[in-house]
Every structure is written in structure tokens, then in C-alpha cells.
Length: 291
Image: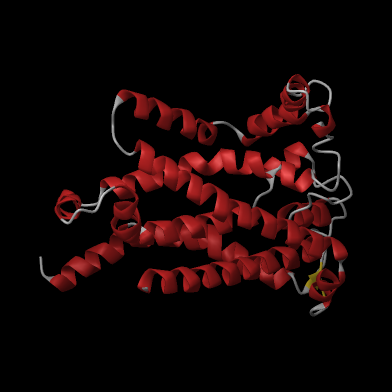
């Protein structure tokens, strides 16, 4: 089989998947962007109103509160999930029985339903029967007991531990796979040169899996910007929009008032913000990778 035939075969093999992906991803995004210029209730005639939906979004303080909260989620994911998963991957990338058990335990939240995770953490944070306040009281730290999900000053930060805990297992498996794919000859050469421990990790292992780390950062950003279910289960965006995210803002604006045109404008805005953040992160990490 010559090179041209080989390429044609690859294109034909990928074409069905690409068509399905385009149908269920690109077409809805374009359709949503289109309806963002209309006043539409979901049924009946859509009235063209230009960029009024986008102007309303920019003037809505709840949108800016949601954007701020989403940035907090993005930072927690990038600087929480990725470093923790990387450290755990370095510690658990070998394959003895204890390490396999620990990997499975850390990956377990990925198997659980988000509803279950949300309910577990609701009980942990419960002001009367929650284990967190119980432990604080047992340690003589009664003054540290708080209304973790009801206080609008700390509610958004209370959602960060379950967010990080839920997805560390995914990045752990990704990083373990990347570390295990580093050729053994590289480790042997490093050993001969006297590199070991932290020096070997910083100078050899991390640079060789830097592309994987970039992919993990993209997944963190995109996943954080579309976070919905965990927040909706635990707080529904409250109290007083203190935990409102862009996705919950879109949901509440669309389905509580039947403003599908406005909701489409919000979803398009989320896509644009996501692309800007991912592009910025790729530019920064690419510069870091070239140094």
C-alpha cells in the first residue's frame, strides 16, 4: 500500500466519526450562536434583535459574578488537580499491589455519579450532622465550625475540595501512562549521569511528558468552564448567586424564564471564553516548554 492509498484509507476510516462529531458538536454550537441574535421562547417565531442579548449579558452583574466564580474553579482545577495528580503519579507509577490499590481508590470518584458525590459532600459540610464540623468540635476548634454551603462568603471555596477530589483520579491515570511510556534507556542514561530523585523528575520526566501536561490543562479549563452538575446538586448556585457558575447561570436564565435566545447567547459566550482561556494557556505552556 503506497503513501497516498494509506492516507485515503485513514481519511475514510475517520470520516464516519468526524461526521458524527460535527453533527452533535459543531452544528449545535453554530445553531446556538445563530439563535443568540434572536428573542425566542423555544416555541413559536423567533424575533431578530441583533446583539441585544449579548449587551444584556455584559450588563448583568450575575454574569460577572458567575465569570469570577468560574475563574476560581479554573484556577483550582489547574493548580489543584494537575499538581496533585502529578505528584501522586510520580509516587504510584510503579506496579506493586499497594500502589495498584491506591490508584483504584483515588480513581473511585470518577466512577461515582456526580449526584452521589454532591450528596456525600453535602453531608460532610452539613452544619449539624456533618463530619467536618464534628471533627473540628472534637479537636476543640468550635470557633472554626461554619455554615459551609450557606455562607455566601465561603460557599464557592467549599465547592473546590469536591471539585478537585472528583477529577484527580482521571489525571493520575493520564500522568501514570505518560511516565510509563518514557523509554527505559532515558532513565538508564540519567542514572549514569548521576541524576536521580527530584533532579531527574524536574530535568527529565516532566519535560518528556510536558505535552501530556498541556492536554491535562486543556481538559481542566474546559471541564471547569462547563461545570454544572456538582454545583447544581450542592447549592443550585446559591446562596444569593454566591456559587453561580456560567453553566448554572445559563441554565437558570434559559429554563426558568424560557428565554432560549438569551440562553443561546450565554452558551456562545462560554465557548468564546473557553477558547480564549485555552489559547492563552497553550501559549504560556508552549513558551514554558521551549525554555
